[in-house]
Length: 226
Ligand code: HEM
Image (cartoon, rainbow, N blue to C red):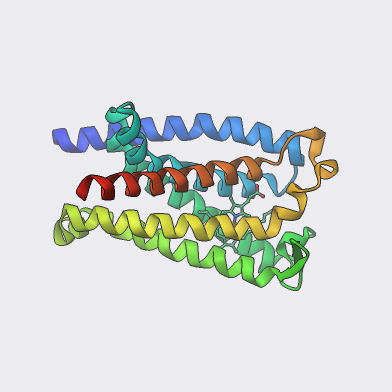
């Protein structure tokens, strides 16, 4: 059976997204391994990192195109990057639940009773857990409405608006999710493996940049309207 030109384009875009994801995963994987050790938790950290990284690439494209006029050709990849990121997030969430519940992992990151010191305030790990679950639900909803029949039902404009709003909300919740767990390491350079800044600190800074870029875009658009 011959494939339609649309199907061929989709397959080509999925393949390119996968190659991009694979190359990024190799770079992040080596960095995380050097910084935190090549151990049993590496794969889960890598899934989590790739989820946030791909989702941030997807969410930042519209703002980057608006301000720089570069990357226009990549706009069509937003859905592929977002859905790809969601599947990494789902894999990370399932593996984390396995570490929390099925096997009692040794790392405090997987203890429900763990408390994290954030600016001198002790925050329960359950809160970080809840932010993770919340972001998973929202990203899941976004992946769900990215099926063709929902895009047709909602109409392109409303669909994009929903993805934008929910995307930035979920990015904020996911940044809080790992900020709670890792802030204490970020502010203690003596604890950094091989003196390298923690990978998730780099991810957090990138995340703030993506949010700021979006705020700048909204301000610029609202000024144009006036
Ligand atoms: C049921 C939902 C979730 C649970 C139970 C969960 C659990 C965890 C745990 C236990 C860690 C610490 C890992 C470690 O230090 O070894 C973690 C870190 C992290 N999570 Fe989640 N998570 C969930 C959902 C998500 C989602 C949906 C995303 C992204 C879209 C995400 C992104 C991250 C990131 C970026 C880190 C930091 C990774 C690192 O240490 O380098 N999480 N999560």
